[in-house]
Image (cartoon, rainbow over all chains, first blue to last red; front, side, top):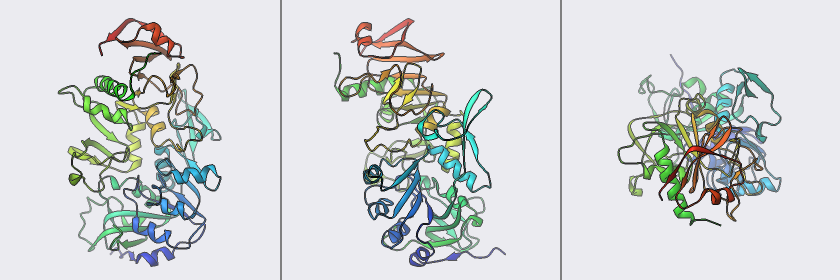
Amino acid sequence: MIPLVKIMSMQEAVCCLHAQSSIMVGGFGNIGNPKGLINKIADSDLSELTVIANDLGTPNVGLGRWVRGGKITKAIGTYFTYNPEAAQLYYEKKLELEMVPQGTFAEAMRAGGSGIGGFYTQVGVGTELTKDAEIREFDGKAYVFVRPLRADFALLHAKKADERGNLVYDKTARNFNPLMAMAAKYTIVEVEEIVPAGSLSPEEIVTPFIFVDVLVPVERGDA
Amino acid sequence: MISIPEDQAKIRIAKKVAAALPENGIVNLGVGIPTMAVDYLPEGKKIVIQTENGMLGVGPSPKNPENYVPNLINASRTPVTEIPGSSYFDSAISFAMIRSGRMDATVIGALQVSESGDLANWALPGKGVLGPGGAMDLVVGVKEVIVATQHTAKGGKSKLVPLCTMPLTALRAVNTVITEFAVFKFIDNVMVLVEHAADITLEELKNITTANFVVATNLRMWEV
């Protein structure tokens, strides 16, 4: 019998985290991000966080609230341009940004969650983003070596979970969520709906429960 | 110096891009002019749109905001729709499609294109453009890289240059450049002018282009 997953309130889940945590946060352009958890942390006294996310939201929206609140020491992602406040802090040297091509970012998390020690890709060869990386030639083409990405926590969003922690996503809100579920040591998922164990079709489950530690039901006003 | 207003230039480029897209091809369209091109597809011409945030088979944006579907956007963060046969997937699968050469074309903008086909399009140093998004992956992995850009930057500086001075997106990645005045192809790393607009002479074109290019023997002219 598969055991049931832990279900926590927003507040309880946020208490799992600590200062200086590395945290993966799902979402692309504020779609598919765990809005309730993000807001709860914005209102907490957590700080000095390393954030691994595609982007940092928009000014004071989504992860933009963490940017404005000075909670982030370093961010690893692909496109921070949506949030000019992050750019400002970067130029003032108050925020470290590591920029990664988006497919390499996704694959690094897939590798991190799959027990893979790294991979070679042609993407980024000859650019300033890979100037310190190992380059190797295969079949006459240059490839750059990429190390996997892992994190202490993942904060994710899913449309539906069953009581065992199996996840189903909604449309383009899936994006990085399934990869981060695999790449983090402790995965907390904000879900719009928790359904009884056994009521999801095994065929429709995208993220199996093995990658999920905690479910947090969306609270009114956070959806 | 010859120039046309920005909005007219963009429409002209979008039309030309629409004509250049492969019939029934699977394409990824960047923000701006590339996305505009869909509105100018010739009658009956079909393409399949992929968006890197995790959808193959992207339908048009709803005209009325009341019809916006929650959690359904393209990579430009514009609300879109499903079409019959659409699918959703995570970002690793999305870029597997992109890097593995299965996609027919990508259309993207440029800050600079060099005469050997290098592309700079992701960073304006000191201007708050931070991060390449999916641009580096797209231009390396997709079969045909079509750059859609105005011929010159603000102030009249050529975007087609001998060597890129802005941060590179990829080396020797560009196959086709479409501007409001000209179409260039890169053949064996040589920049070849294949077509130019009827309202510009070859001499004028050379004057607004710092990149060195050769002229195709069957150079065509298009009526604008």
